[in-house]
Length: 228
Image (tube, rainbow, N blue to C red; front, side):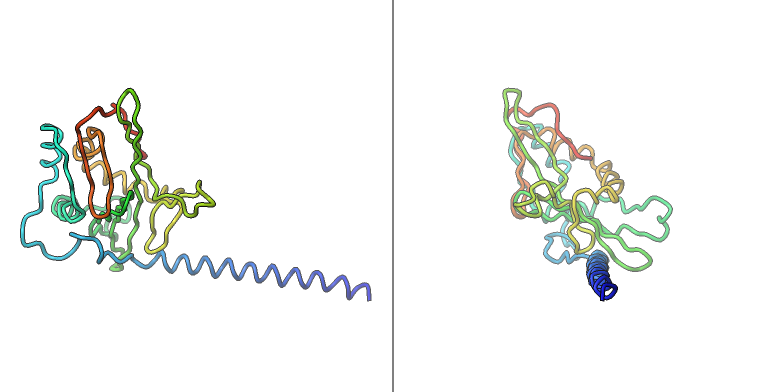
């Protein structure tokens, strides 16, 4: 009888542990499935399709706004059409021959921008994205701008766990962006002047649904907190 009673707890623990491993494996398989599915970009204005008119020259528009001191509103469509016309489609690294950069899309939602890189590998499309959030504080030195690499908290109860971006359709924590940071840093390097005029030299920056609103009038702090 004693031997039988000792066997039951071990058998129960074994079944619980097996169930736990099964749920973990199922969750991982589900996550990998959604990560492999490219996100739908049909809602992003100005991305894809055939343009019938030349895109707005955003580089010149930013320069003029800073130089002449007036506010500027850039729409999601303006930004995506300009990117499609100016972006260098180049993939570096050992997989450069097999992986192709198809395009970059910017989705503008209230207070958050999402930068989506669209690639194809061995003929199969996939996407990775990064959320960007702007925070501005005002002091005697002027308005200080901080560019955060997140889209806010996953849940209000866990404010320190931030949404970093998406691998495919899967929203991933901020820490996993380290895997794709070289690609986004390379993208930033192509547009140094535009980032300088559009963020560093602007006193007011605001992300709205479908628009980026910029205003150079006022006192901007000389340093900007940049996550790249």
